[in-house]
Each structure stands twice: as C-alpha cells, then as structure tokens.
Image (cartoon, rainbow, N blue to C red; front, side, top):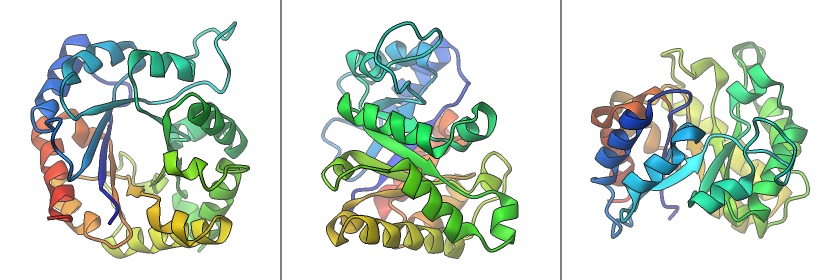
Length: 256
C-alpha cells in the first residue's frame, strides 16, 4: 500500500516567528516514530532554516516551493537545489500552477528543474492540472498527459522512485471550489494509467499521486479515501494547525 503524503504549501505567507511556531505545532503531531503517513511543509525559502530548526528531531519533513535548474552561480534571485539539500530539505515542489501561470514556467522548464532536483538528492513533487476552460471543453485527459509527457521527459523508472505527482486542478486552487471525489479519482486514474504506459506497472503502482485544490478538514476524508489518491498538497489550510492536523489525521485513517 502506498504511504499517504500530506504536504503543506505555505506559498508567500508567514513571518519568521509564525513559520517557526506553525512548524513546531505540526511537528508535535509527527514524532520521528510515526510511520503511517509522511508529512511535509514547504515554507517560503527565507524561513526554511527556522522551520527546519523547529522540525528537528521530529518526523516532519521540510521542502522548498521552487528551485533553479542551474548549478550555483550568477543567477540573481534564484535558489539552487544543492542549497536546499545543504539546509536539510528533503523535497521541492516543481511546476505549481502559480509558477506556470504567473512566471511562465512551461513543461520543459519543469522537466529541467526536476532533473536537477533528482541529481541533487531531492524528491520532486511535480504538479500538473487543467484550467477550468480545459475541463469544460473535455480536454482534461489530454492536458494531463501532455504535461506529464513534457515534465517527466527522459526520466527513468529508477528516477521515479524520487518523484511524487500532485494533481491540482487550477480551477480549484484558492477558489474554494474543489473537485468532487469522483472527479479527483478519475484524474488520478488517468495519471496512473499514463505512468504505466510510459514506464511500467511497477512504477504506476508505486508512484504516489496527491490531490491539491482547496483541501480542507471537511472534504479531506472523502478525497483521501479514493483508491488512487495518495495524499494531498494543501495550501491555505496548511497555515493553521487546527485545519492541517485534521487533514493529516484523515490521511492516517485511510491506512488504519
């Protein structure tokens, strides 16, 4: 059985004090001995060190929200993958819809970043998802397959042991809208089928696919109970322990 991942994407939120206290509150619920779920938080880069300190000694993992596809050098404003690993990060989110929409990141850029992350020892959470107009036009499957083909180009089956896929319908991110349980499962089945065709049945069975898009305590149980939903990439609700912890519990309940 695939171990659920509950990942919090804090986006451009928190300050140093609140980031540390938020991480500490979550870490209390994730002792080093906990093995039913994986819990990851991805704070703003400037607060990674504070969050890593707060998570020290616990089972809470810490990741970056983005990284460069370049080695350290003359790239003003960028963060190298090796800088994340140097701090102690385990994961990095790549290809989030906000990076694609607001910063022009195409599948080729996501692919380049993914390769660099894996080569640096990071696990990549690679995001894919369709726009509302694409879903309404019946193009969801085609969009997902195209994004997977471009974002995971040239990766091997072995590489995929360090890749997590996050399905995030763009129309459900920060809008309060959420895919129905059936819509989420359908998209996840599409992605898993693509993985089998591109790699093999073992990769398809082992790769964890997260749902992201207005996940909250009141809808988490239904989404996470779907056979092909292996956790959640949580935005706003991950900024409040009283919301994020119940989502972690909902993930744990699927393996109880």
